[in-house]
Length: 274
Image 1 (cartoon, rainbow, N blue to C red):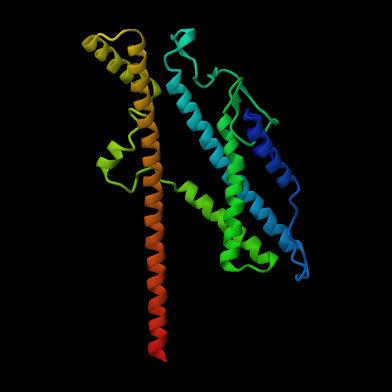
Image 2: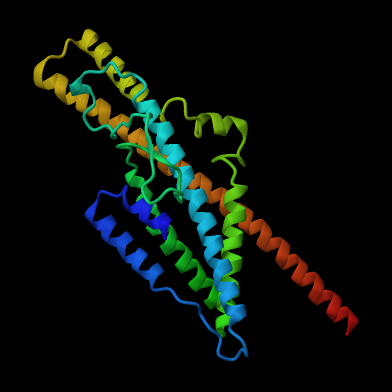
């Protein structure tokens, strides 16, 4: 519960806070799923506790990783602290890394954060909960789980598999060639917002010197330049998502084909035996 509570302290959007509040309420209302066909309920409590522990480990890993990524991004954005007041419009809030505080108690569930350090992106914990719930529902439907014990066992397998995948998660584009990684997945240019801005300003100043644009014409040209840069950033993000999903689907297809070939070999051996 502390994971959700600490993430809730970072969320600023009212809709996201409401959604996360509903998730917290659902977790608080959760009870051990008892199988009345069993003679004793101690095994059901053990399995439920194991699911909660795996869920806790997964949340800690994901949210701590998100905090680290957000801090790295803020360090990039605010590395030049000499900018004037008018040049920081639209930037995420900075923090002063001097005083660590705990949002819940003396033993925080997540990383300690600095005073006035906020990461609104931690609302993703509600989406993670929803994704795990949906995946568990699909697994129960796929495996035709009928009893409570079968559904709990599938949930535990799902959480353990998610933990394993997260701990062995490769960086984006690891399955592609080095040239594609350099062209598409490199963080040198697009991951630096001020680098992108400086490129736009250089293009704008060059065009201004060559064509001597002034007034409204210059404003329209500046809008066009930065619109194209924003479109490039968006297209790159979509390409990375598509490439990552393609790599995942290729891995799943290899696993499926290998399992299918093993099934066919077993069937052929059985027919030969007959």
